[in-house]
Image (cartoon, rainbow, N blue to C red; front, side):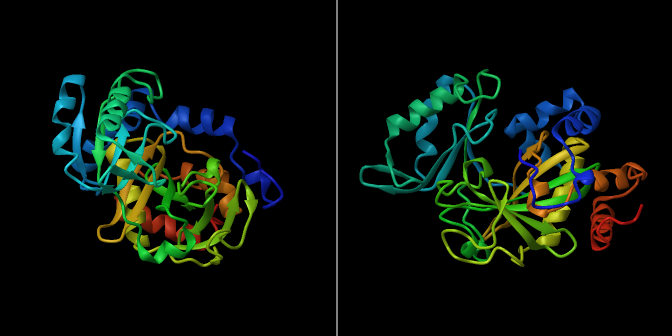
Length: 317
């Protein structure tokens, strides 16, 4: 990560080593990491606290179960994912069907035998973060909320929120571009726009850790973009802490045009470029909360606390 010229309060910047040793190691017990590394386990936990997520059409945990693939392939739209994948590896997005097969997000055609082969590769652990066998599952295709169409290119934006001991502390929306091939992946060229927690509007944007004011493909302004369902998103992020118990957590949320906010996944090791997107550091925000007893607060109270602190730029210490 580049911590460049774009904001000056470098004393507030949380670095990788401090994040790992001071927060991930202390707040995220190793035994709990598997709860978010396995996406199907994550979904079970989210369901237990009534947090919405994209519908799962089918799960295949062993090679012999692939014979039941046909019941899932009756659908025209779906997403294939490895349960133990990371970095978007092994994900195949199907946006429609043609006479020759299924249409992928990049416009290419994939045949049934190719889908079956991909599923077998997932089961063998080809796309797993640890190389071990992984279940493969089919999930509903998200249709992006129209409020964000002008600031995204051909893909679905997602909102990343850093949650500390159940309190949302920083947020950004990741916006697909032509360079990122329609994916909300900052490393592939997607944009990151920081969001003011207390208002739900974008305040600053980056592309590869450099400031940018307009979307390079749509020409739309990236500033003061209003994120729909903002309070609901904050509540979902805070409740996600209750689902998995990780004290330092990244919550990734998509906004479906019909269903509203849905949790895409949880991350026990969220990156730090979110600080550049917000022109603000995480360190002071975490220090404010470290001094507080947050254990008795429910999710609504934790969200209210985040909004109150953010409205004063976390100047409460």
